[in-house]
Image (tube, rainbow, N blue to C red):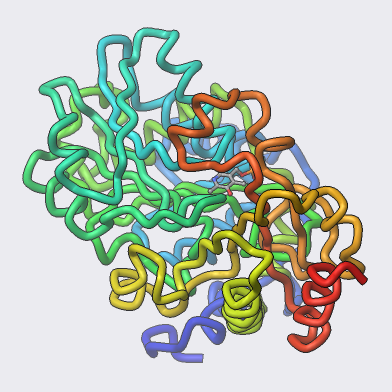
Length: 414
Ligand SMILES: *Cc1c(COP(=O)(O)O)cnc(C)c1O
């Protein structure tokens, strides 16, 4: 195959390992379980440790199976480099571990994955100041910036209320001010959207979700898109400034965020994620179509008080999503009218499973305030736009008619 050819999304993922050469002509990158890597020449071992030649050192810092997945995610995001972590939270945690110091300031969207919100609270207790803003308006982000602001952090489609950050304008603002812009692309995946296109410097993907896609492995990644000039970042230590500035960020994250922090992805999980990623585009086409059909059905039902789905014309950022994303995603949430018990409703569903994951092939459904957003309390939930009756649906690849029928029946009480 010709390396230079501009292949489509799925072709690129399917053939990426093979183009780089796989051991024994194997079609899958093998699962390398070895923690250590031996060298016949001790001088070579030293030079690998000193970064003078490429090679693996110790499993916490790199592994051939994981590295093949990193390359695949990097192709998907069209980045300059990608690192994988044990979980999506491991990837986000590594940002804070490696790039922030006491006295720094972060501006974050208030509409966040619950554990990221919780992590920010922890970081705030450790001397980093965090401002939460409604990131659907760039003006709110601009108003929160201070001379100490190092990072602006947003999600594409926020889980679970589906607010969409003003992605392009925030990118322009960050570029003007030399601030590192980090976008969590989990809900859109690189198939629907590349944050690089709006100037994000780092992209987070919780690989656990749609990229793996089958709910059988945890993983996360950070991609450096090359859009950020690390010369402008004050917290890079001299040790990681040996190569060209484009490499500085990932060099420091690899050392401080992966090697020292230790949330490394295991090779077995990397293999599961790589296999799942092969069908990302196919699954997204199906889940997005199913989600659009389900959102329409719910919106038309008199027992439903509100439906939040970017594909509905009633969604406040519907037009923006149409401009930026290939499709509107597979996540929706809705509120039942007062007087309908949400637990009884959930128990009537036969296909949609009460469970907390997202991006699975199966449709998963969860009452948000009672579970994943329970710990933060009613006040913080209200500030994030989370109604007490909110139900989140991660739409799967079931046959559309079966899925719609399941929800219609449960609404009708059968
Ligand atoms: C799930 C999720 C994460 C965390 O990923 P894990 O692999 O579960 O740690 C981060 N961001 C978003 C938007 C998520 O949905």
